[in-house]
Image 1 (cartoon, helix red, strand yellow):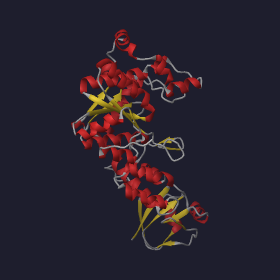
Image 2: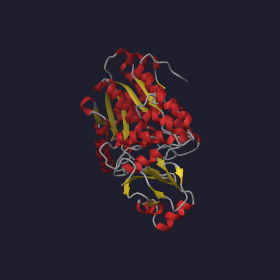
Image 3: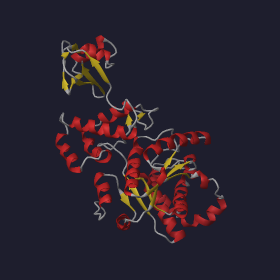
Image 4: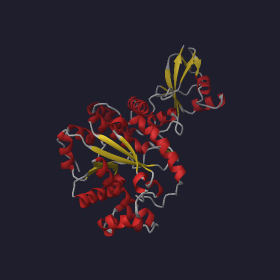
Length: 387
């Protein structure tokens, strides 16, 4: 289902693929069009020492909305990380110690500060208020506003129950606490919009409804689509390896290579999300899918994302090496680390595994006479500069 927006910022964000669901699309459109400043929030649970590629779309959207003039509140879930959101998971999350959660928060906060200007925003930890809640008072004051019937009907819960997979009462409380987070931020920060991944839709709705029932006020929610490949798989993994935003967990060179190696079918979608290229220019790349010309777009994508995530890294692009003119190809393949030995280098060349500027070269007698990019297989690239 498409949406028509009067506000050009919302329209561009939607056309680029940043936005998915809205609790009240007309009211949100009017809010953006009014020009009045407003505050929104988005939350990250601290379940690892780094955020990952799946969070990158959220961060980009916060960055764009802040530039538009909205005030962001970024919530780290010091309390909710102890529970675990049951959303679409097949089993309960492993429990983390308080010290591990704090270590994760400290690490995540450093990286978030790189992307978001907290001089015109706020970083909060929901443990600061959730840890002070008296359970009986919470039940008395807010429990009556939550319908168990509705909670059970939410897709994330009903699917888990349908599969007859264990759902603990601890996890079941997560949506209540997230709804309370929104109410707390509404009351203390005048926060009127919550952003979240599409898998947070149910929790966001509970938050807007709680604010309406308790305060008689309107608050809104918008979701961000999950970042998936053209075949429906979550982006941010190579096999079983997660692509992290921390350079200590995923080196910038590997981070760049991940985006350079994405499937052709995903290029244009990701260019819309992670570059500032005009939509018309991006659409021109559609005709190049499946051809060598699409590699130019992949490099633009990899450069743009890596520059955003690792702006100060000296190794954010393809590694470069210098060789004398007419150096043998097998020597270059070996000495650049594309192969572990000269024998393996020759074997790779003869088996059509080596490309120079996207053209297969299968002769071990080939000599490199000009600067180029050499690729081994689908994932290893090096730049060669001829002296």
